[in-house]
Amino acid sequence: MLFYFFYLLVYPLLLIGSVYAGYRFAARLRKNARFWKPLGIENGIVGFYALLVSFTLVQSGTHSQERSVMIHSIAGDISEILRTSAMYDSAAHREVRTYFTHFFRLMREPFGATRESVERKVKRIDSLDAAFDRQMIRFLQDQPAERDKIMSLLSRIDRMESVYYRFLHSYYRKLPKMILLVLILFSMTISFLIGFISRVNQNRFFISAIIFVFMSVVTVNIIQDLDNPAFGFIQPQFDDIEEVMDTYQIPV
View 1 (cartoon, rainbow, N blue to C red):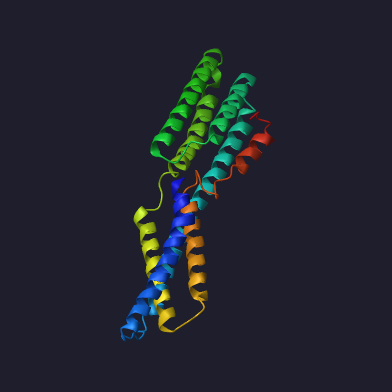
View 2: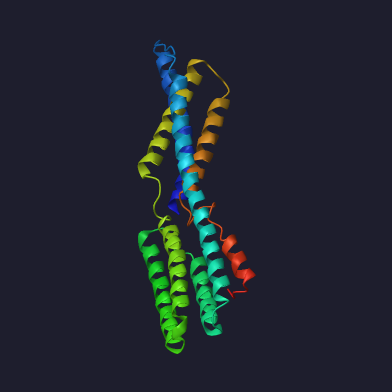
């Protein structure tokens, strides 16, 4: 959680410090009778930064949207499996319901955002699958005529789990840290430029600096929040899956 301390406290202070440094640097030049004239590229520098922010924000938003799409796909697969299994033998249907009760409980448990934590959760699901497979083998020993149906059922479950595994692995596949570092460095550079120009133009009000710092802090925090689905304020919602569980009265 240290990254929240950095982005919510340290980062704004860095921007404010950059504005002050630019202001003091311009004051020092003016004191030494050295003057600066705009080159006309200042707006282009800000525009380049805005383009980079837009690209990064879109990429983070796309990753978040992909997770939502995967949840919707998982919910659809679960609904199909439960609806189909209702037409099977009552013993098989009961095992399917029990399986999804445990599966959904595992799904809702927090697990972190590292490869190791994801792998631990995958192993727990594999253990659940192994127990379910043993139940299905015993069922087929008593009902060999149901083999095709059970194989189709297992295939659907594998498809659903494949999507869920992609969902889990997306938790630690984040934006390259270099991109966020570049955003931070660029925003500090522009903050320095704003402070410098404000002093050169002898502005007594720092409204431009305040707006830029505010927008940069909010935008960068949104980007890193979208990039941390395990700990961020913007987290994947499992409402679609919960609705399926409620529809088929699966105890969770």
